[in-house]
Image (cartoon, rainbow, N blue to C red; front, side):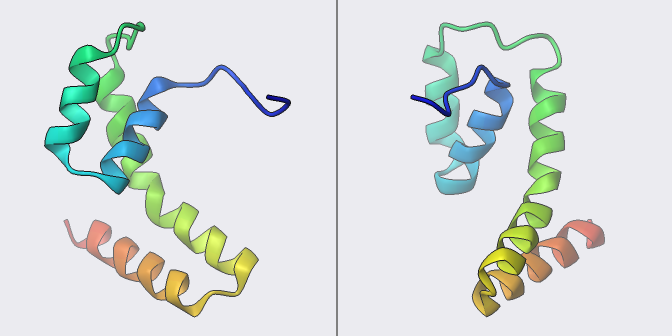
Length: 81
């Protein structure tokens, strides 16, 4: 527990969205008892846009060609929207 922190629940929900589907994440959100705040959806959208950069940073730390390719593809897809 030495690294436990109080953080933004929107970031936690982005992790769920990244690993699971929207319907699962929505079921978790509907049963969440904590305070999400009025800007929850905006914060979630912001963190989702940050995911390619996290992937690229991780790829640079681990020298992973797979993560690099995935991060670049995700960034490219995001910029084309």
